[in-house]
Image 1 (cartoon, rainbow, N blue to C red):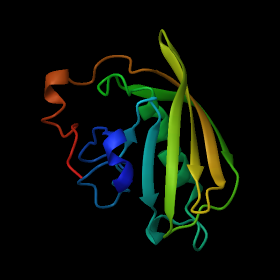
Image 2 (cartoon, rainbow, N blue to C red):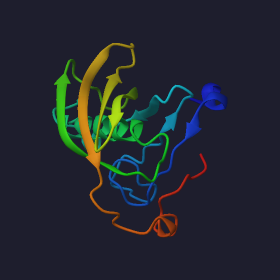
Image 3 (cartoon, one colour):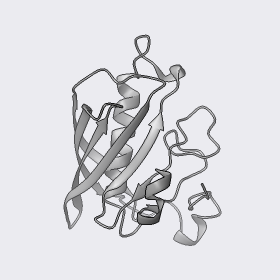
Amino acid sequence: MAEAAQTLTKQPNSKHCFVCGVENHSGLRMAFYHDVNGSVIAEVTVPEQFQGYPGTVHGGIVAAMLDEVATRAAMVEDPNDFKVTARMTLRYRKNVPTGEPLQIIGRIEREGGRASKAVAELRLPDGSLGAEVEVLMVNYPDPFVEESELERLGWKVYPD
């Protein structure tokens, strides 16, 4: 991701989220970036502690990573406009290996009104498709916290 850093914008992380929490040492601690077209990109090497079968990332972890990328695609224009997943259709295509670099890419397909639809895919080290999702998201029903409090609570862009 280093050579492409000039064309990507880093997105906020939280302190304690399982997927993106910078202080969650039991989580994945993933960083997310978006490009000028609104696609969200993340690269991760999943450690063995998140395996299902030996050497294979647990399916629930795969689902969490894809869900996060898809949801973030709907938040590119406003990272404080939180969405929640209403429905996720997931297809596992190949075993996803632990300990190897993976790339996850998401993009919005439809926005409007109360609901948004996004798709995301997980690419294996050889570039092949490991898993893909289609996610229907809805706006978070009510603000759970004042926007002015978000940074104090840890929702901000952290340096690489």
